[in-house]
Amino acid sequence: MDESLKSLKDVQNWIKTVYNDPIAKILIENSNLTEIQLETLLIDVLSDYFTDKEIKIEEKAKLRIKGEISKGAFNRILKQAKRNIIHSIYTLILLQYLGLISLTTLRKYLEIPEKIKEYMEALKTAKEKEEAEFLREELKKLLTTLADHKNIKKE
Image (cartoon, rainbow, N blue to C red; front, side, top):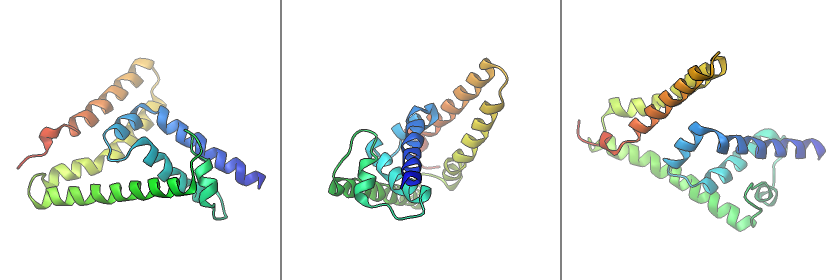
């Protein structure tokens, strides 16, 4: 049980790093998930990943950073998060189907996670503070540009 608790604490610590990451903040603000839904989803997925045994919903509900919630509330928020993810996928498919967003533009959105990885790796190896700040600002510009509503139009 002690090893399990250590691992579950790791889940909370990892979620805290997500909330403090400037790139993650931009992505969360522009996503279709609330912070609470994202936190609940992360707890559900990561707690199973970090431990060999199945974690009960009651234990997962206690892992919430912003305070423990009931089993029912945890399940309700988790269901909302999953529904929002599915709706987001259908929305992208619908927009492409109706010609409101091109397949080329959609591919650009799908390439963003790889670009983020590249930027993060470059930030880790950046020798100077100015270089790291430049890379961070470039990534913020990319995300802001792609989040612009003007990208949704007939092309």
